[in-house]
Length: 502
Image (cartoon, rainbow, N blue to C red; front, side, top):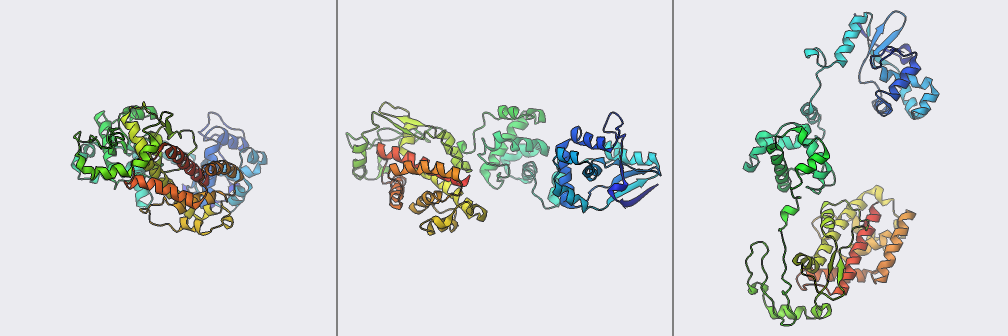
């Protein structure tokens, strides 16, 4: 016969013949030690303790056998042991149970119990809990679909596997039909797309919650990966380890590589200084020659760049090194910025350089500087808008307080944020960081900026104007010395932003 009753922990005894162990234990102290030292282990025991303290009661009733002398806990020894451990101060210290946790347990006055006076009935109940389905008699565990569905019912965020499965089940896009017909097993889908080598390398995402299934570039890439997976059989043993996932999808380009042309050859004769004529460049996508008429008035273009050309002297003999930033401690969590930092490995150019791609990068370096700064400053704006982060700075020491408020007040994410005020604001905010270690790093970088005469708002204004002349089409390139300088200035600003956000 079973009755339900609430009992105090000191009324209950632990089960010395616990089925978890191969032998009968001698006393309750040994029971506690076995639970913490062997199975389930210290980490899981402390996790259970945190859960009990958080909710303020036990979520599961204990199964008790009352033999007339003792009330023995046949199921629930892990939970009961946490109430018993305070009787053994050395174990409390050894397992790192805090006084606050013990105090919280004291508020749990009674434990709900199922009490049996028939041992076999009690054993049957324990067996139903712990030996699986038993043909339907026992507890049938949820699979990954059931678990995700329950999250959905509760209004909680579901995992990427469930989101992807739902998307393909509902999609009517024709090119997704193969995956739609084959997709299954949430846990395997999650295994693929939770993997960093997919999330970061293929989608350039910082975390697994950043997938956007309303973005067709994301769903196209997901479809591409799953098509490969199901064409190879779609079994979990294909993607069981990270190395297997990497190997299966090694030839799949990243999401941004799909958006870029395969090659960007730029004819070095676009501006021939000796003849002052514009050559006919080749369109890298179509392979057809463009008409010179598309450049408008070529005489005006030549005059426009005359000063720059004479200063630059066509890729100087001593060479120019740009984007040599690999070990520069830039740590800003922005996917586009990370992509370009990964791809813009250093380029060393001199008069003997023949690589069309390298020359293209050299000509367009100001555009890349602008993109990188846009990404970094927008992340800084998000960072500074968090009130908790503002405590990391002594704002009162900024001579112009509006510099700080100009970051907080920026709301339109589509607006350009690379301007003299923002860049000078980075320079000034760095000076009022409270962390002494960060200040040392800032001092080194700002000293270098000062040596390059980049320490005033007007200097940053000139920097932005020079980049914009390239971006707005009024120049083709910067002279070598200015390019070298601005390469270092851009790096310095990115380093300062990284320091601010750490």
